Amino acid sequence: MRAMVIDDSRAMRMILKRIVTKLSFEAIEAGDGQEALDLLAAMPEVPELALIDWNMPNVNGLEFVTTVRGDPRLREMTLVMVTTESEQSQIVRALAAGAHEYVIKPFTEGAMIEKLALLGLVPTGANS
Amino acid sequence: MTLSGSDFAFVAQMVRREAAIVLAPGKEYLVEARLLPVAREAGAPSVAVFLAELQRRPDPVLQRSIVDALTTNETSWFRDREPFTALTDVIVPELIRTRAGTRKVRVWSAASSSGQEAYSLAITLQEALPPGWSYEILGSDISNEMIKRAQIGEYSQVEVNRGLPAPQLIQYFERNGAHWRVAPALRRNVSFRLLNITAPLPPMPPFDVIFLRNVLIYFDVATKKAVLRNVARLLRPDGWLFLGAAETTIGIDDNYERVAAGRTSAYRLRSAVPSGAARRG
Image (tube, rainbow over all chains, first blue to last red; front, side, top):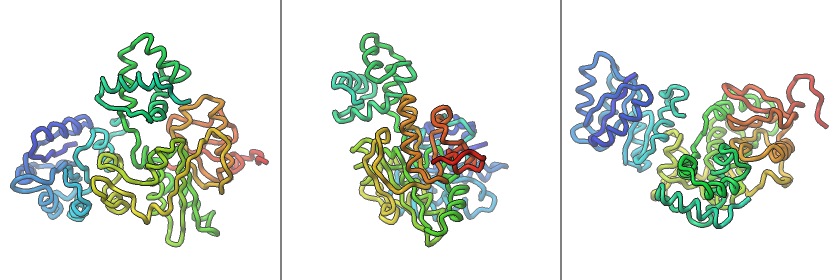
C-alpha cells in the first residue's frame, strides 16, 4: 500500500513518513497540494491514503481534497487532514469537502495510528 | 492502598528527572493505579513493596517502565473498538426485542476514569437505538478527581485525537476555548458517581450491559471474586458483561459464562444461558 504525505514542513513530512512506513506503507512526499496533484497525475496507480496539511502554498489542503473528490480516478483515496486548524467549523468544512478523518496537530504517533485504524488501514497487531 | 508520602516523592523525582513531568501532590491515586501492573509484572505483591525494593536496588529498566507507565495516556475513545461494535451489531438488536416493553437501556461503565468510555457508550447507543428509545449511562470510579473531570466532560485537543472519529467529534462535542466539551444532548443521558467496586455497592436498578474493562488486572484473586460478585448483583439476568481483553471470569467466578459477542467475547450469567445449567436462586 502507498501513502502520500502532503505538508510544506519537511519535519512534519518526516514524522508522518516514519509512522506510515511503520504501518507498511510506501511513503510518497509532496510539499504542497499542487505538487501532490502533479505526482498523482503521473502515477499509473493511485495511492490508498493521503495525509494532508491544510495551510500550504499553491494548492492548500482543502482545495486538494475538493479536487480529489471531484476526480473519478482519485475517488478511492482515503483522505486524512492533519492540521493545526482546530475550529469546529473548519473540521465541518473539511469533512463536507470529502475528507474521511481529521487529526489535529499536535498529535502523538499512537493517536495517528488509532485514527488510521478507524479507517481500516492498520494491519492487525501493528499498533501494539 | 494509597501511596506513602516518601514513595510518592521518590516516583515524582524520578519522573521529573527522566521525563520532565511534574507530578503534583494529590496524584498518589494515579501513581498507584498506573504502577500496579508494573509492580505485578516485576513479581512484587504491591506497589509499596516494589518501590521499596527499587529504592534499595536501583534498576534502570524498571525505572523506565515506571516513567512509561506514568506518561502514557491509555484513555482513548471507543477503546479496543470491538466491544462497541458488538453493542451495535449484537446486543442492541437483542435488547430491542427483549426490552420492547420499557424501551429503555441501562449501561454501567464501572471504572470510568476521565469519562471517555461512558461517553463512547452514549454515542454508540445514541446511534444504535431506534427513535422512541432512551438510555442511561452510569460512570463510576474510585477517584473523586476523575469523577469531577468526567462530569465536566471537557477534553483537550490531544485527548479528542485519541480514537474519536472526526464526524462524531463535530456532532457530539462543542468547542470551548482550547477544549472540547461533550454536548448537552449526550451529557443528559450520562451520570457519574463515586463508587468503590471492591466494597458492597449501594442498591441501584440493574444494568443491561456492564463494562468492567482493565479493572480486574489490578486486584488479587479474592478481590476479583468480590468485584465479580458485586457486579453479578447489578447485572440483569440476561445482561452482558464486558471485561478487558486480558481478563476473564474463568477460574474466578463460575456464575458467569463466556459467550461470543460479535468478534469479541462477553460474559453472561449462567442462568441466562440456555445450557441447561441450574438457575441461580
